Image (cartoon, rainbow, N blue to C red; front, side, top):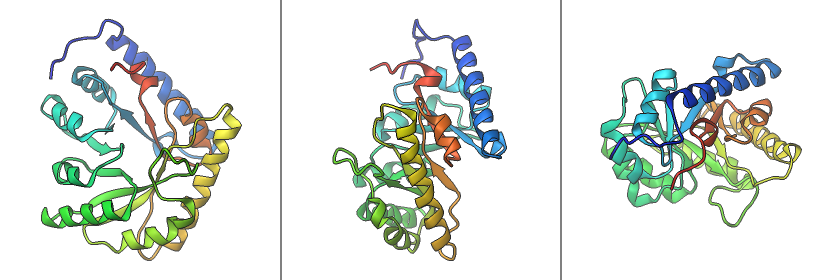
Length: 241
């Protein structure tokens, strides 16, 4: 994988974006009586060249998220991975689990029981425990995978019992909305579901993570309860395919 600099990105550009995002996160956290350090910033690095990823790591980003297994594996040898956490956040096919089971520290896009069973199987083969987030299809969109809100608690109990898996919380990508008020309603529903799940599973799993909010809506997501936000284009600029 090459590390050619794109003509429309510079390190100064990344510096400015990172500073603004951190300031926005801090302001949103304070509004909810949280500390800025209570909110984890994930840099979503889909299509981003390693040279830029390494720069944002040098700025203090300690967590990156990749959508595709093949892309993540192709970047690995170029990344400064010391003290770096890497998560899979895109739809994960069961036959790809074995390729990343000992590479990433969390799978955020656990969207089916069959996938959970494969993660459990591969984790046990590698004598490790994989942290996961259940992906919830909070908007009940046919085009998206994920558990329905209604089945979340029941499936969470199933997953929490599986060996080799540590259920850490929930993740969601709400529908595209016209207004902030609309998207906040989805975030609010997710937080209610997360708190309910957290309470009912307290003896089975200690849930700590509610992952929601992306470049366009991470501030309202934090205000509605997110403690992990996934930011890509607001940091790196528009996607380059």
